[in-house]
Length: 234
Image (cartoon, rainbow, N blue to C red; front, side):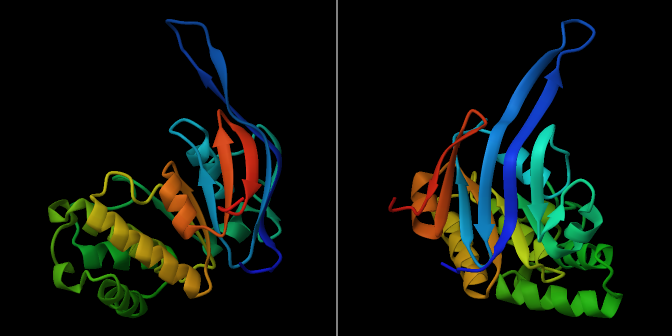
């Protein structure tokens, strides 16, 4: 594990949601309850917990998608609320499932579009896209529409998409959910390669074996509260 300075710092983080509407009384639900943790640079850091534990909420706060109710979160030393514009260009985010891809576009066009959203020119984006398609074993399906991809292929394309602008920090939210064992193994190997290339990776998972085999450090989250943080062996 790297001994570098913390890339992510979270202190007493709270996030509440209000549910209910016109037909029922509004109810406040606490998704994160006073969470504090730090992620050192170069670490493959796992956030482990069952479905509904608050893992995706944590990712959304740290990637500046939603704001915390209380407490603080800093990424690269910048506050996720006041300085979000300084954080976003340095992040890569891949959610598990079907979010983040355009199904009517082919794989190549998905990546080129993602690169252009990050300010890359068409020629640069196209060259980068082809390099990533080759790296992730998708070059043969580059001109195939994504709605014809298998789930494993789509998940590899998710990873390629979040790497288009070569970010320093990657957030991977349950990237192997729903994959068959062979596809999940391929994605895990790609994650290890990203870590070996010097990326800091923040991985959420409910799979204990995955956290044990991949992560340098693991934080266990249950019902929005942090249970413990340590190495997988600990």
